Length: 591
Image (cartoon, rainbow, N blue to C red; front, side, top):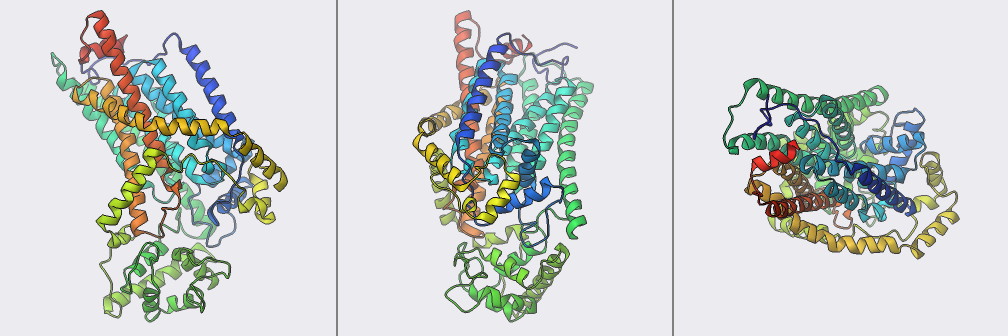
């Protein structure tokens, strides 16, 4: 077979090879990697920002590290996905400090994105610069990087997943050797499984993946269509290409599903129900959604289940009346524990109240209790004893509060926050309460490597960091100015190869758009969460760390495309050759 324009479907298999100056590039990349790890190591571990989350991850990680699965069952055991606690445990067992492990994950994502630049443009310098800029992202050295919380690691997983799905799909469509294609597919599947099991809302990444798995095949067809002269497609070649893409997607899907099934089976074996999370899935999620649709006062994200709604359900549900003494005791505000703040999320209050009634002995008890409570609410709605809004799927019920005005206002606020990097680069200034509390600190010491030996040592480290944090402040200022410029350049760089079709540059546009779509979908999700769901999130940018990371990656890759286009144009003028067209690109690709 011969390699011709349009040869993604017609032609011989090609092998990706590294350019001659690769050794120098690897040395420079290695230096940048070491520098990023050193900078990450210099950020003190402060921890303790969230009253429940941070300690929960460490507690569960301790059980995992010592072979006890997720530990004794209570209302918190299946509250969060197990991926981040498993990562903490893995770092502990391997002897790697937690924060270094997180940085290595981010460097792996940066390497996958840089590799995407290289395999498409074959410009090692562009790939190297992209890697360095991504590796030194100051978001990895900021406040959330100093906590044992999942959101920073989750943002790295988001980039890694999108980049590896692109690499695997591109390898399938361009007939790269099978070992590389399978290896990248396995990495994509592993990152996808970790991503799915890390947080409770994995579907927001779906549009990014769809852009890749649909966009790349469409582009290969466009490459054949725009080729002159157009070569007749060989049916056998087309079937092999489709089969390779199906193999890639199959490997990724099998690994993700296998991981989810395995976690669900372990939970069933230990706690009685095959679920990965009992906050977002199962009877509690349905009960919470149905309680919210009961008419009773103005339900808002800040007060998602009003007292009037609670009292209405008490009249029809014996199970809800068991919760009443804990949800609505006499006092200035409803809460469970005397020390709980008045603004404690009501969903947590319901779960704590159920725990006080004995509903959290096993996961089977949980599903049974909330299933009964939900059935009583539903019966009240059907009989007319309760006035209820339309029943929607549990994950969508909060959309009954959707209002365009607040949503758009929220989107503008968050979009400006991301564009200006407001809050993403703030340096830690104080120790968290967990490191000061002796009991919580002891739990940390059992599983988190790199933790200071004493509170006084931790304070000394923080003081030393505060007095010598000028490299972090410099990086923060530089990247705040850089990111808006990258965004403008990226728009031009990503759109140009599509409008004036050029292969393979257009393939990299697919990845750039996938990253941009991912940032937008995460932004939209948080906007919906802010205006309709549990409780307001506008006080905390950690929900948008993944959006910021994807947006930043979009800026870097799109700018790399623009630089490649400019370099190609300059070189073409010097050699009096056309700068556009598939023939020129194929010649460079073949070379």
